[in-house]
Length: 625
Image (cartoon, rainbow, N blue to C red; front, side, top):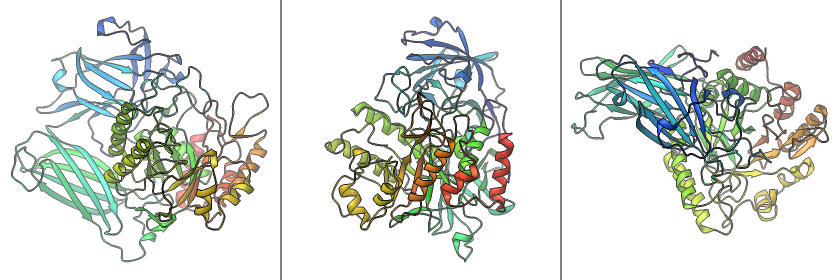
């Protein structure tokens, strides 16, 4: 198994920023940029900007890693960088990509405004060929608008108070994911989407092509699993606008059939799972009628199915108990931005070493590089939309628009096994009494199911469920006996939904009688390790590492065997700022031996003789050194 962080130009985050559509000609712009803080968002023209600081992109200015470390209130920040004009061949185009800029971004090239994007967790791109000067350095300027007091935008765990309080953390302003340049040919592959079907034993392919050509095009596809060639095929289609044909120009939609093994699919080596995350590597070529290769990209997918069968979550047609850990996705010195690719690898291997088979990424849309490694190392991911904290027409429009962008960016990743548009009624605080707010949650549930019918959707995780495929419950009761009784009773659904109020909230809204759904304890535990007078906190606390491990073990012994539960998600993976209830410290040092945590989590220590387990354990030891 290959653990290298990937190929590509060196930069702050090595590896291609868009891992499921990789093209050779790209350049990372991470590194030092000119910088200025515009506290009241007063500067209107580029000539007013003082450029009085330097910042390390892609780290937010609130973080130490950025070289700024300013956690005060400010409404806008400015960035500037000079780049050399690349040598473009005839018809080639230059595209500027931003992984994420929080919250609104204006972009100028050589003084000409070329782009505006709103949404702090999703990527955007702009073709800048026409704005380039004939020769010499090219100037890129970015203005990021991010009012710290705005509660109508999706902001996740970013605090609106000056100092972090309770479960909210320092803000993330401006550029916080990779900035990069990409050269594309006159006609090029712009988007790729993958789906898989075990029922038909096939992979679904959707490709969109942009650019100019008057010729019919052919898309060649090669698929490999390791050294085994699975598919080598090509599809001719019409690309030119107005061309004759039986479908839209510039699109390819195909179902690529694989050879059915004719045995128990669950045991087939081609299937993806956390135990054996088999990846199908793909090469795509765009070819014209003369046989010339116009574009070449690399991608990947996996063959697996996610479903709900009665009260169980299933993977590849079999019940799969969810053993998740809540992951806030923050690092000690770099905030929401991982310090490097190895940090993603280390987090995934640490989660697996503690007996978890997945993470619930909480109130954050994680960098695609994390999803790349979760795909390749075998980690289930629950993807959750960062919340807005007011319910207004503006917040509805903003969150809905950005959620659609999230789905489009990530729906091809095999590691993602559920979508969560809302958490704990944040942004919809009056669900029990407001039909409009219930309609909002129901609308996003159905919209998500429409755009991606292949995964379960949890409309509102935690409580007050109005539209869902899984009942997610947040319950921080620290008494294992009470937890065991609550989720291990006869007629559990009727009793639980009628009488129990974890967090003081009713668990399900609407009429009873719907078919039984899986129940997952999606937040529980929260045991902090803290001394008297320590300003950090947790939902409950312990004073020694031994006490923490004992309390964790008791809770997991109460939860893990309960027949009413399809899985659990423990709070949480690491300490995060003032919230000290991680199994790991913020620097990823374990608070107890990993094997003992794994024993409590999963009921067994991972088998070191398994080649996959031994591979990621070896890599984890290398990273820790």
